[in-house]
Picture 1 (cartoon, rainbow, N blue to C red):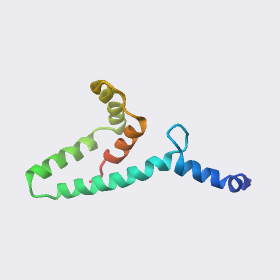
Picture 2: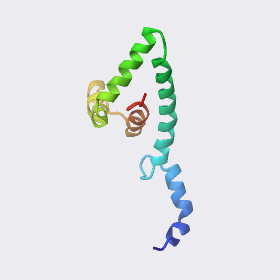
Picture 3: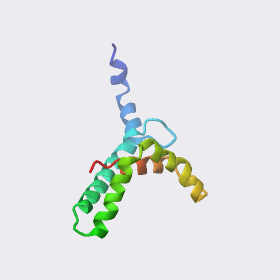
Picture 4: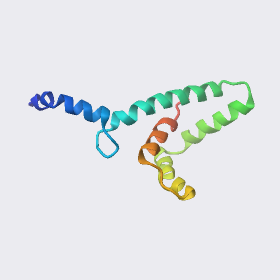
Length: 109
């Protein structure tokens, strides 16, 4: 295999991954990095809430975790993509839906 094409286009490939706009493909890192950061923060907060002695803090955290554990991710994506916009009366931006789902669903606590 000839890897020279990668070496010749390295700057373009890196710029495309990190700086891709919503209308261009290749925005994986633009979505993954905020999702990892937000998911880590949310997971830490929910984990601490699950350790609380207060029913008012522990209860909602337990419901949140058990809900997302019991529902397939594809169903949550379906809800956010079709049901929520129907109930709100307007569509949600694709990036916001993807970031919300990747950072808040499927906690492993």
